Image (cartoon, rainbow over all chains, first blue to last red; front, side, top):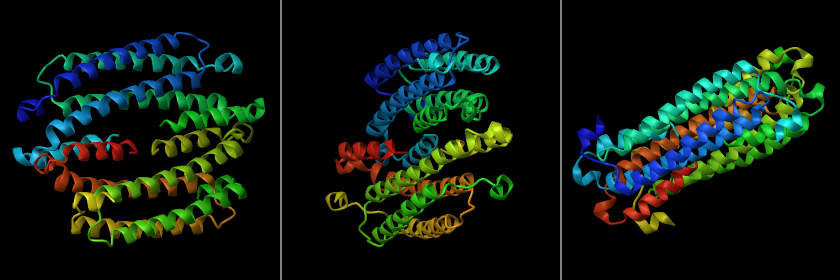
Length: 96
Length: 96
Length: 96
Length: 96
């Protein structure tokens, strides 16, 4: 677990914000599931809903990323773990 | 509703496949929600889970897109709705 | 060469438009090259220019894609090459 | 100019590496320009070349980003410009 290794943690207010958004995303996923129960559903309508869920997930990702940059990345040099911090960040950003 | 307009629908087997994958994605979102209940959670661990959910959503999107191309787009010229089919597809692909 | 195989070609006006945009993109790349000759150049200024070039390339890609959808994909069923058309399109869209 | 404001600069070896890669990208763009002179060029062949150029630009972007993280972002707290560093980074990453 990287968490244990670092002793770094997500700040409480970003964590709460991320949770609230993910609850809404879960609801949105359930909406798409119901949509797919309809035998008449049109492909493009389903695609649009999936893109909307991805947009909402991007926003959760941005909020956690900003909090990580602000609380952990900008002070890595002082802690002395900058090599690890940079590589794991590059790894996560690759999937964007 | 585009579905009504077109009278086109998502083929049953892609619809079932998309539903099964979305059920698993809902479970994954719930896993991230539980992860965020942990006050010690590390930002990068949360980011990785969100990227994994997005990867799974990309796969659902690809499967619906392929089915749409195969069942509706390649035959648009015969139906005579190619103008609309192309523009709505460009619109959806823009968000990729 | 897929071109020979298909006997399909990019329509002349999209080809001209793509060429004109790529000439401007080449000029933009040369601008970034000159920017990088400056020993004082700031990373984020270079990153912004690279993102701008990518945005311009996205537009060329969109214009060729729209032309391909309109001229070749929507009529694939009539030609009978829909299987190949769909798979090569999915392959190209994966990199978006 | 952010560069003047910060007094921060791209490290010489990343700058050289970025320049070398951009020279090769300029050559690739010229190759696509010649390809588009061919009246028989197939849309998907042109799209593939554009995606290849974008992949090469992504690599230049990654190399400058890694250098920026390593040389400037991880030490922002010590310099005291972390607010600005985080916001401009979020802005640049948005376009990825």
